[in-house]
Image: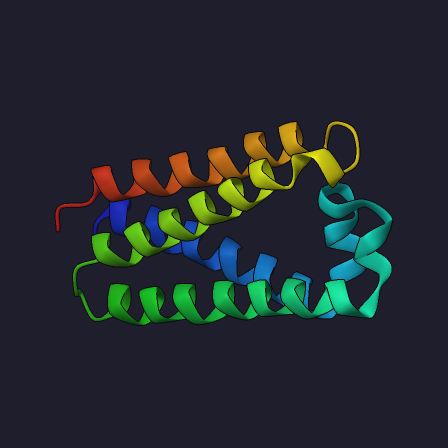
Length: 124
């Protein structure tokens, strides 16, 4: 297994950990993004769903990575997920806490860039 593939697996594993955190502690992880609304059960539903998306998508990618299958489509899916989160944040920025949209753009944008760099480094 190449170093680039191992690096991609690390990125994917960190996304799984993040997803598990969203499921286990949605208010804690969502507070910076969504403010006090993250404490409300109706807000925690989509945060947990986002966590499940992270776990399912990135677990599938790791399975494919271990089998030597192409990872770029999986990383592209991860990037699209990040970009949809960014678009939703920009659309709702007027109702989010001060600085939340900017912080989300930095974190989500960085996540997308890391996944893009991992994809670019792969041989297939």
